[in-house]
Image 1 (cartoon, rainbow, N blue to C red):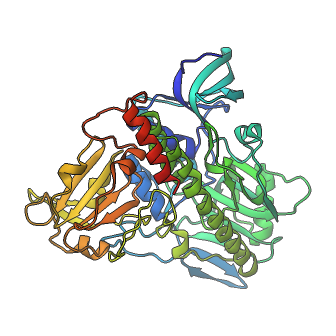
Image 2 (cartoon, rainbow, N blue to C red; image 1 turned 45 degrees about the vertical axis):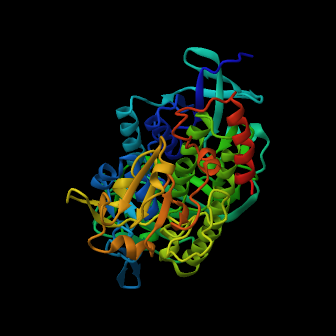
Amino acid sequence: MTTNPDTDVLICGAGAAGLTLAVDLARRGVAFRLIDKAKGPFQGSRGKGIQPRGQEVLEDLGVLDRIAGAGGPYPPQRIYGGDGFQDAPVMAELAPAPDEPYRTALMSPQFLTEAALRERLAELGRAPEFGLELKGFDQDADGVDVRLDGAAGEAALRVRYLVGADGGRSFVRQALGVGFPGETLGVRAVVADVEIDGLGRDVWHRWGVAPESMIGICPLLGTDLFQLQAPIPLEGEVDLSVEGLSAMLADRSGRSDLVVRTVAWASAYVMSARLADRYRVGRVFLAGDAAHIHPPTGGQGLNTSLQDAYNLGWKLAAALAGAPEALLDSYEIERRPIAAGVLGLSKGLLTAAQQRGEMRRGRDTQQLDLGYPDSPLSLPSPDGAAKVQAGDRAPDAPCRGGGGQPTRLFTLFQGPHWTLLGYEADGAAPILARPGLHIHRVGEGGDIVDDGGHIQSSYGLSPGDWVLVRPDGYVGAIVSSWQAPPSDAYLAGVGLPPARGMLFDPESQVVKDLNVEVREVLQG
């Protein structure tokens, strides 16, 4: 065993979760490697829906515009029956609001979303390593020894942390012995990316209600392909060839004029809902489908995976900079209940789709209301007067900079830093100023002007209030001028060392004492 690490983090799995984590770590200057046993990028459209909260995450990472440019809003669904059809929206299309700039799901085939993330990663000077497989690992108190196998043969690597973002059949999860309880849902389905002649691309075509007659054909924006979805019997072989899918389409649609020309990707799978018993074992973490799987109804899977990585990235970077290990425990505390709720939502939407042959997605699928109010990182306000509370998603708001140019809160939040926003406040900033914390004052004499009143409206702040916003866009604390600001122990515990010590010295008695205090704070 070697003592010194070869790199700080090894990410196993270069799908959406692994790429998101890689982009976040790269912009923070963390040393890592991103590997995948596959020979190249995933080529299917599988997770094609990006919910409003997922769009906010991708905006912060610098990739949303290029994804939206290639994709677009979901088309309405056209439900055929009898001698005609009926058009209906998949979800309500809501106009952007000052506090919620994205309120309608975006369609982007998974392979285009991942391509945009790889492009962003390349801009940051990094890239996935395909054709490199994790064969085993052992961990101790200081790191993880991993064994890799690729074209150049076997290799050993020492890392500080290992993240398994390697899918529902996760090797990392199985090697840890972490349970993955849940259930199979009695539904088996085909999903395929196909070229079809004779079908318009302006709607999502659906036929049938009963499983044996149901089929959906959705145009994949940004491509010439359609995504074919159809339930199939739980047992038996299924023909995923051009001929086989053409026959299925003709049989279920009742139309002989529709021709499948090519099959770019196809899969037959049994729907399940499962949740890992643990998200962290020592220095090894699970993220994305390695931690949770559920039916695709509601378009929740890829989005939940993105947010797992988004939550974990800043915490790993903070721990690597010297923040207490207790911070990393908050990853499971915050993310596992979210996944449990997603499982219930997805199963409910699946039942509705089976019963009615259609699916409507509402506010609960947008993920804008998810938060961490019970997290040890959320410091409750004694009076609770503000509209937004600790653990809530921090709303956006259009405003102006002190120089007169238009801006918005999300622009202030964008990046790997924390943000402290003072509303008609003064006094606390010199005390709290430190590396990794951007401080803005709203109001007279401040650098931000709330000329439209949107900040006050979204947050419900009173003069003198300070809002502390985490790097992942959630409120850590709200305090008033007469209250004590977040303590040095809390700030150091989340990776914000005092200004007098630009870097943590882990051997100093001050930091050792602070670590004890932080651990008590974070563990309640």
